[in-house]
Image (cartoon, rainbow over all chains, first blue to last red; front, side, top):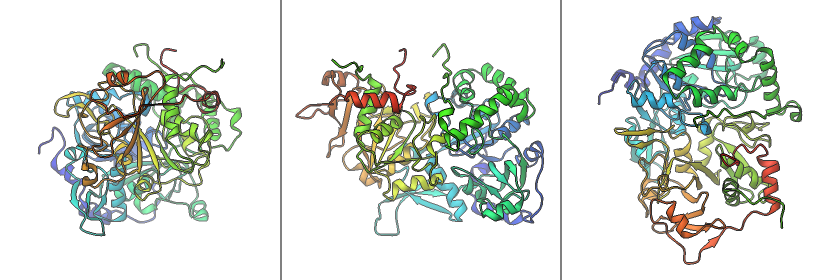
Length: 348
Length: 259
């Protein structure tokens, strides 16, 4: 089967257990200071042609400021994967993705993502395989477990199987129930960036709140970049025995406060709902609009602080810090308002 | 005469969803009206339910209406959160009783399409993808489908089966090796279930003012009609007041468009 842009080698690499093992075996696993700038980390470890895995929950503890740096560096021919993977929307708009392994791209109730629809319709990018959140999560988990595949009861009987060359259905050869099972292969993307609340300089990383697939992905991916709200002393992590990602999985550590904006980061800040509603409803409908949106937010900012200035500076930060604390009920939530004006374009 | 305005169609939908939840259950919640229905159940007849979310939040404290299934309100003071693979795993191992999901198309056997209108080879429009839909619909003991009912959205066959209902009907779901299955469909018209043998969608109860003819006119296939037609008892003033004041006070999901 031929693909528009992706190569068979890229398709095979995703499930190449031995290749991932060889790659991990050759990694420099010495405990060393891996701190570097965001642009160096992206420049060195996210390479054109990589299978790139999204982390977090699209706009919850996702390394979005690092994604913006990928856009600025104009990465090319990436293969997108992730569960979910809504930031692939603008990667597609900027021609960074040769193809995607789709679980879900969108912002839930805010409408369909038209960057994604346009890129697939005009064949600027391609759907290489389709998955559910749970089966893709099982593929990453299988990789972490060292299991070549996991047998699941998902996807069975559906048309999803016709658009997924990786998953095979067999009658279960084990146990007391020999009904069909779907074999989900272990998935080994090339690289992921994981935004965490705390990491030490070596890469031991702590996640507060839902980890989604990030613990599994840190083991599965050949290369891992950690961006952190705070770099803490190693002893802080040792005292709490709180790391969920060990330093030897990690290639680079970036000190990146506010690195999940315009998404939210548990323990730190709530999101800008308006930013996402503008993106999905006003910016994605046309190429001109998405380019203008990114000219404003990404190409004319050099880092997260300039981005925050455009969001409203210290007033914005103060508001979203209080909103997150109220949402997590660490401050009196009656003092904080979640009222806001939904972004509804005139043509809707 | 009551001074509480009668339920609008979205409120009626949320109310019908809430009535499907039994006290004591563990409920898998998605964004939108299912969240409203779950919260309404918890504040009325089902105070001892536990809500869990695919993004990992488990048993959060009540708070503001979540903006997304990943919203901090879905893990507000949660005793723990789960990785995504484990959160779905709970549906398979029998710790989740009921789950809700919507879709662009729902067909006569309860199959759901959230992938593509037309086909991938001949695209009319492309949809966001399965997300957790397939997982919930493949694994959960009772899954409840939620949608606005129109002939386009309720075709005889969906263009693409993203989430399995009863597949081609009869015993085809069981033969495919799937667990659980859809037990109800809730729309602005009323509540449906599935014939136990053919697995075709059947009217269970219509909302006040609705008729079989209206239900059929909103559907792209022939609905089964029970021998004795039932109507939903409208929500009491007390329930409506809880829905409006405590569950969705800012009318995020229950405000009728254009009002």
